[in-house]
Length: 212
Ligand SMILES: N[C@@H](CCC(=O)N[C@@H](CS)C(=O)NCC(=O)O)C(=O)O
Image (cartoon, rainbow, N blue to C red):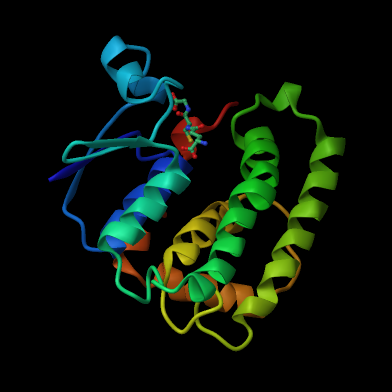
């Protein structure tokens, strides 16, 4: 059985766990990070010198970085739909996966979510937040045409790109922010919410992270 270290409230852990579930990998999760600690030990640092979660152990392979973990799971265990073997089919999906990690997540997670959840009310920069929320809506509008004619991200079937992008939507739709009206995106989110693995690994209550 493979193992992932990381607390269930971490979005990066969530995407690794959801990916593992969708490729059918039998996996156990060990709480680490946040209030659970355990990431500063020598043993943990030997697995991830950054002292961050998630970390995957699969046989003799130990891997950190959630995106690398997801791509490994896809390549090693995914179906041809989840991880298209032809680079020319996979690369356009990977473009949106990479965009999610490098363009969307910095705004959604490290700005908006961080301000509204992980920052005490008195310290929140509401002016900056307003601009970030507008930017976030623009980014979501940018990817939404991908769902106009396909049920999943650029595909008729769920792929690794849906794991990378789709995991962000639970936070996007549950944060108390204004959102542009994007029916195709909302319908896609409904399709994800119907999946048991999404319910189990992504729709995780994050109120324990909330600062007053
Ligand atoms: N780029 C890394 C970022 C990992 C990361 O920042 N993990 C956070 C949780 S989302 C963490 O370990 N924070 C410290 C902690 O939870 O103790 C990845 O995608 O895996």
